Length: 448
Image (cartoon, rainbow, N blue to C red; front, side, top):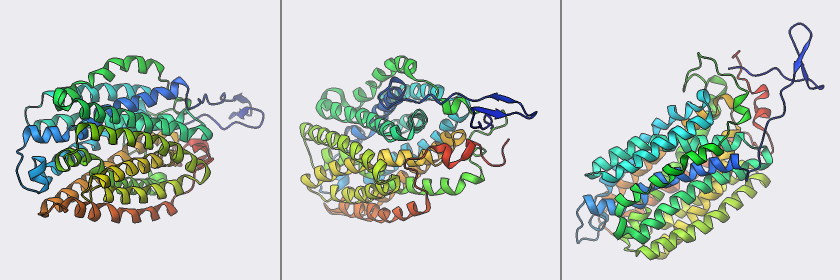
């Protein structure tokens, strides 16, 4: 890859023959509430609506394809064993590793084009999942569409970072996180209120709504100037090539943190509704009330996370949020309704605090020409973390024979991940800095 020559103090750069060439005009950057940035937030909303259907409807899926019992164990109450649920969700999560090469396409073909393609394919396959004839067909169809939606969310964050300056960046990243949360929340609320009417098939079929509006969102989206000024050579490799030696240490640290976060959020978020509806027997109204309360708390969390990231720094905000997610996830599965509601709401708040700081930090640490490929890598790391978390949670829960087996699983899986915050000390603080400052010239060493 290559970029334009550095400009001198007079706005021109020296040519090879001692002459000068015109300087690049200033980057075209946007405020967080302008249409170009709102568009990436809407892409994230569509992704949340498509992806979260599997979580919100899991109880209905288990009842449809499983067998309810009269015992007190998790499997008796839910319809499918913790192992079967864990393996199915792990397969769906693991499929998101395919988002790595899909996201890296944005480093070659552009952010806007990649966003449109991945959203269209991912939502279309979500609609197809509505006709699943069995649990494993449901897992297979949803797994095929998952990589496209995962890549879309990663590239949406990249777009938010590249379209904004430092003082607007956490707001834009928070907008993307909020958009995803709104899409996920809509799915959960609709299912809770209309479960008997729509079932999981109706919920998945509703993904056709954001699919219909996709052309309008595509018109709002623009290609970031940061990417437009980077020339991609025909020899550039889509995944492993761009993420070369100068970036690998930072990449490994970011991926390790993404892995740890997802070990917590994978089981905590994926099993919460089946735990509430099938195990604690919360009514649809109570479940939707919990989601609404969490949505309001999540909005406050996004505002708090943005403030902390801009005042304290990205690293302290990420550390505080990760510890809070581990604790709240453990509390949620201790076996009472109030613990579930409180733990879930507090966990959503902690995740919202994490989003602006974590999304900004992960993208600011890398130059423009590899940023989408890096987004694919930390999506993949998050997928592996979620798979490990789901399998571990399912195995511990299935090994138990009491009403507290889920609580033991939560404590064993979530709490150890809080210690991973120490990795943040090995990364630089990026608050108040543009990505170009961390990688002068935005050109990787050794590339021409």
